[in-house]
Image (cartoon, rainbow, N blue to C red):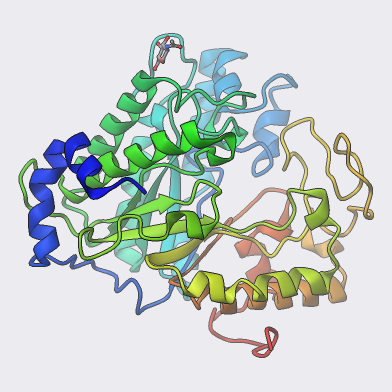
Length: 424
Ligand SMILES: *[C@@H]1O[C@H](CO)[C@@H](O)[C@H](O)[C@H]1NC(C)=O
């Protein structure tokens, strides 16, 4: 952690605002009681940021296997064709009816990923913008139907992780190594905070950056830490004065163990900061090789780590899916570890009847999905709550909250348990 004095000298503007918070005279007054009411929600994945595995049809229709992310979607086909496909997708993938269904399912939050290119596109960047009016419409729908919104910056200039879900699938992410990219991102967070400054009843949280690649080393992590300090100023002080907002800043753990962040931006010096951690058990050979019982046990075993963290801790992405079988999950054109089609992997079993349409799922598999879903929600509610990835997917019902509700492995009331003692 950066020392207090280093912080003061490096962020002098923030330091001026720092004093009132230290005195504790302006505690956050959020429209949602984080820490006492559990966050239960879904991500609206694959809507304003494309992901090939969530909407494979958008990519398959291009007929070009080099189109693997939103960057190449704009770069390698006719711009008007791409724009028309995007507009039709934005208009149909998520509508007000989804907000009604999400509220009816007893959920209280939606996390909405959006890319930097919705706000500005630099010279030579092939991204197509136009997403912002949809985000604003979504905030209105959320207000009407009583849901809170987490606005989540999911893709930064240069890409913060190189994943296709950052908009640009590349081997060496270039966000952290280029101060122009970081400065552009700071400006976008300011813009987001100002855009929703009068919507703090609904947009209760801004997440300044999804999944920065902390696994790439300490140079990434030091840029991320400074960026979190700057984001705190940008989100908590959107008025250009010492007046604070009621907006929660949701940091991401950058794939570090929670112990790495212990003591970072904690009260009383810092107000309204929460930590986001993402929990998946299928992105390594070891994890896809676990038995169903081992998956459940691994989830249950996280309870004490999650519950003892010193900030509000939200599991902002997780899934009842236990394999990487979903088509394009590891990237368009990349196979799955589970069936051995991923380079260097060892086959565990067949992917048939595990993903795709739930009509192909056996009743014992659906029972497992229910058990694993309950084990995770029980465990994550030991912390501040959970947001499942994702609300819907074209052809991966194991990941879809909507499909789980329809087929019954997700309960209509998320507090209703069939296996209340699954974690012992
Ligand atoms: C840094 O990123 C900007 C775009 O944000 C780009 O124009 C510039 O060339 C990059 N600089 C380097 C040294 O790569």
